[in-house]
Every structure is written in C-alpha cells, then in structure tokens.
Length: 639
Image (cartoon, rainbow, N blue to C red; front, side, top):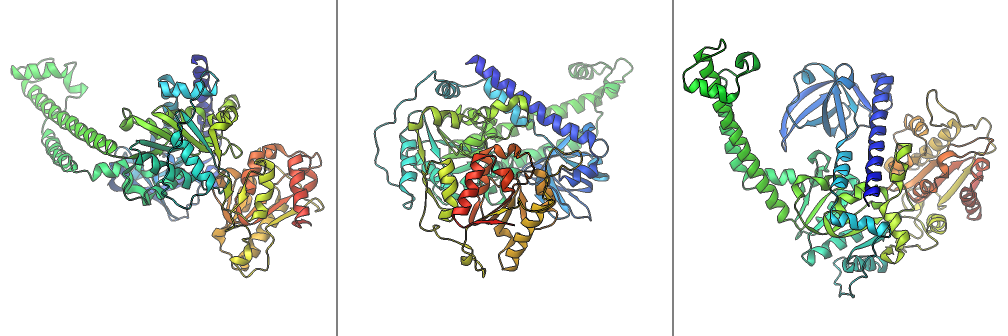
C-alpha cells in the first residue's frame, strides 16, 4: 500500500511539473500576441476596481477591441505588465463579455494592476495537485480500503437485503431504479455505469434524495464544476433538501450562487456581529495612523516587547527618543487590538461555517474542493462521485476518504482523464474502470438512452456496449424534419473524401497538430446549408480531434467548434465530425483511441455527419466497420 501511494504521489508530481513546464515554455517562446491568437492570453486591457463581492475583490479589465479568448469563467489568470513570469498576481475569472473580463482577487490588487495596461494569461492552478498529494500523504482508513479493493487486498461485502423503495421520481426506468436500490443497500461501494444519454444525473439525484431520506449525510462531487452544477440544478427542485455548494464562489454558476457556502456565510444571522467588529477595526486603523509604525529603520533592533517596556518606563534608546518610542508603542497597542478583533471575526466565521455544514443534508463540490478545511472534520455516510471515469485515482480518493461508503458514476468507454506528461500516463487508469472490471457484480448499466435516433445508437451500442443499450420510444425516430423545413430524415451520413484531389493532411509551421483544408470546407458547407434551412446555429456542433483543425474552422463560423474533449458530456441536434487524417500510409494517429470515437459519434441527437478519407481510416477495423455500417444503412456517399 505504501509503495502504491508513493507511486501515485510521484505521478502527480510528474503531471504537475508537465503542466507548469508547458505553461512556462509557452509564455517564454511566444509573444503575447501569438498567445492571444491561441486564446490563452488577453493583451492591453485596463483595470477598474469594482469593490468586494462575497469576500473577494473584483476588478473589471477591458479594452475597445473585441476579446475572443478560451479564457473563461472559473479559470485562473496571471496578471502582468512586463514579463508575465516575473509576476505573482493571480485571480479567478468571474464574468466575461465581448470587451471586458472580470477577475476576483483574494486581496486588494496592487495599484500597478489598475494604473497600467496589463496582460492576462491563462494560468496553471497548482492547488489541485497540492490537495491530492496532501490527501495521499494522510490517507484515511476509508481511502486505503478503496485502494485495497482495487489491488485485490480486500473483498467488498455483499449488499444488504432488499429494502422497500418508494421512488420520488416515478418515471425512472428499471435499470435506473435498480442502480438506486443497489447503491442504497451496498455496504462498501457500488458503480453506476451510465453511457451517453442514459439519465445518469437523474439517477444520481434520486439516489442523493433517497440517502437523505434515511438521514444520511451526503457528499456529492464531480471532477468539473459544470457537472457539480448540473447535479445541483436538478437537486434543488426538491425544496425540502438543505444543500450547500463548496468551492470558489466565482466557479459556481450564477443560478446556484445562493447555495454556495460563501453566500450563506454572508447572509448568516451572525454576520451583523462581523460587520460591527469590522467597523471597530476600521476606526482603530484610522487612530493607528496618528502614531509611528515600528518599521526596521525606526525600531533599530528592538522587538515589540522591548518597545512596549521602554515606553512604559518613559525611556528611549539606540538613538530613538522617548517620544518616538512611546509613539511606536501606541501603534503596537492599537495593532494588537486590531489583531484580537480579526481573531474574533475568524471565530465567528468558523462558527457560521460549522453551523451551515452541520445543518446541510447534502454538500456538493468538485473532488478537489472536498479537501477544503470547512468539511475537514465532517463525517459523511456516503460519497457519490460523478464523472468518476474522467477523474484520476488521487482525485476521487479525496471525497472517498471522507465517507463510510462510496458510489462512483461514469462510463469507462468514454474519455479517460486528460494527462499531459508521458511519465504520468498511468494516471489514466481510473478507480472506476479497475473496480468495474474486477467486480462487475458491483455495477449497474443504465441501459435506456434518451438522446439520439435509434439508428445513430446502433453502431456505438454494438461496438462499445455489447448491444446492451436500447433507445427510448420518445427518441427512436427523431429527425431533422421535426425541427426544420428540410426534407431529410436520414440520421447518418459518412462523406468519403478518398477520391478528392489535394485532399491531404498538413502540419502548420511549429505545430504537432494536423489540419485538412478540404474537410474544413466540406464541414462549413454542411453547417451553412443547415442554417439556410432555418436550423439554429446553437443546435449544430462541429467536432475535430485535432486542435489546429478546430481553430481553422472556428475562425470561419459562429457555430460551436470544439475538440472531442470539449464536447464530452454534451449534445447537439446535428454533429459534423472532421476526422482530418488523409495520407497514403494509412496512418490515423491518435484516432486509434476508440473512446474518442465513441464520444464524438454519440453527441448527435438527429443527424451525424462524419467526413473522412475512407482509404486512410479503414486501416483500423473499427473505422472500417463504421464505414460498412453507413453503407448498409444508406448513409454513405463518396465525393
């Protein structure tokens, strides 16, 4: 166990170093302009201080030119005027407009950040790595048990006998109900396998509500803030539940801010006491200004106690006059009084936090925020972790370590955690996948999908889920005719570009990514045609596995264009995929990661268009079967 934990810590540090190195090297070798073109910096913005909000200092940075950036709400940014790497001023983005971006700082930002035009850089947040490492260094018994199940050092207990279930959500299907029941009766852990569109969040919300019915205290987490907010959105429909959302208030969606711990603290009954104490502190600070601050040049080696002693005797020393000594002593007296008031504020804040946490039925947070001091001593009956197949073992161990039992929900047939460092690739092996392979009887597949046309479900169902899924009758036959004037009821189209001239993949200068101009043009043509037929641009998505291909398409349309990772967990009425690879060597690179293919082709509800060179792609058996499937279903065209 010690050896394995040591290995995990080493892997975390490899990944941390890789992330920091990537950011630092990019800032070093790229101009601010180039980094802004990539969406990872914003140049020449002027700051304006807006005041405090939920204990944080808010600054709005703006300019007359449009701000088009990947930097978004919840991201950490580095603020600088010269070399960014010489600055240590970081904040969190709270709001983003077309010509401004608001940033929250823990303390009042320095004057230079408001007086000069500054640069904002997307910044690596080290705190998540530190929390994972600290948790591993002090891993609780429950955390160690979870690893023992995975390492075959401990056998999980059988579920308790069946209990009568009165389901709150009466429309749950059989597999969802079974997942809830098995999760409630497990003694150690249970796994909910939720493929695309199978109502995983809905199932988790029912489970959380049922746990609270049994007076169980629930910790519900996910790897991303978006997934946590998704659960919270559904959970708060049950008005009886007392729910508190942990984490940086600026990473919580605006709709859910009233459930955040920071907001609840601000609205707590005891907060008026803090305001009164703060007024006293402000008055003392004003009085303190009348006296000499004992800086090194004035105190000349005297400690605070020395100064207070000499002043009480009316003495000076080392060239300091008795009056100056007395003035410094008065400054110290006021400062001590201010410190006492600050300590009192901290005591009241801790009391408010304890009160809020203790009276909450459910605490929600990201995996990382489950390490916050506010719940350090809270005992949870169950930890329910969503997106568990996208989270590393050190990440999921944070919430697991705090609860008697744990439930993991995810889909190991979709994308694993994103790992940058080659030396840390073992972090892609998740606890969810290890446990579901080792203990299949401790899992439940959610087997009815509510997202896509039955034809679109057919191939991924056979290829990745052993035909274990079925589509609900409500979506079986949905098509584009339902939402537009277009005469198109075909759900699948594979556009084979193998006969096109000049259809070759290319590298942009100084880039490892790949582009294909021919495919980009075809993707845009399809998208623009659908817009002409009255389909809303928000209902169309374009996916490419390659970042440079995403960028060249993105620059020519307002339609959402993202990588496969950017679309995980999401859906669109129409999805257009540009596979990019087109070469005589039949090399498909990281398209061979079939989990990426599974995610890409399961985002579409009514229409899926795949653009690719069939001669190149069919070197892989799965892609060959996909092309054959499209032919059988009359969804193949060679251009």
